[in-house]
Image 1: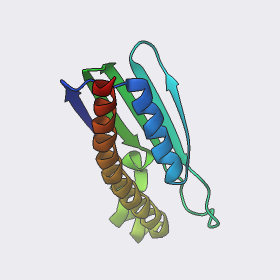
Image 2 (image 1 turned 30 degrees about the horizontal axis):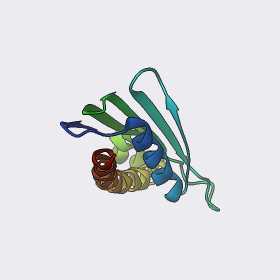
Image 3 (image 1 turned 180 degrees about the horizontal axis):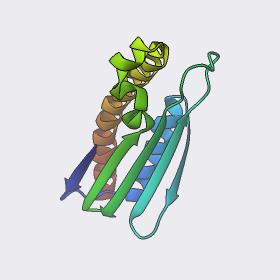
Length: 134
């Protein structure tokens, strides 16, 4: 999923750092990097839990554009799981446990994404206020 902001002056480097910190607070190992002029990428991988049988989420976020016209893209490893497409069939052949794990992972990813977009809106508002105060 992606969203675009226009007419709002935002420090993209600061925004990328804020988004990296968001994932760290959510128990992810996260790193951000500048990938050319006005393009930033954040990669976040869920930290292992005590139950290592759970699949770990991997999140990719890309910020690109100008400070007053930019786009943020969010993608998750749960978006491309093979078993979830064939959940009914896999249950019939005994692989239902894998489909169940993937469905739980997709549910967790969707919840995280909702929280992410809410946080992005708040971070853009904060960044815009800081820019206008300067």
